[in-house]
Length: 122
Image (tube, rainbow, N blue to C red):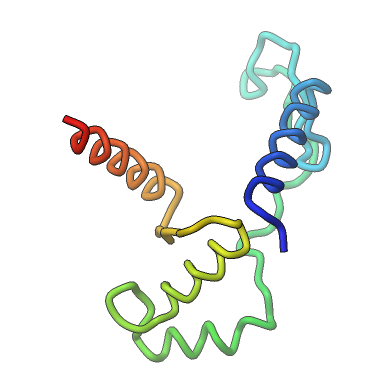
């Protein structure tokens, strides 16, 4: 099991190395020194095709279909969301986890948490 601190350290080290080398080759990205946008004739920073999405795990199909058919696929009904949060928090070495529907929702939730924390100080 990977701990949250080790994950963050590894991810941070990888980001620093990518920035230092001015490239992210595994993602097909390179640093563009041209001052012209690729759209206007400059050099593209993307050299590979985009990965296919969604990434599908056939081993999870039966459980996914079961949840969809049950109608218990959101936080208000069923236990799948809380089960996911517990397992993900454990995997990350965190006390808690809050599953959200998107990255935008995750950021908004974090900002609301900060606002609430700030309001409680006053």
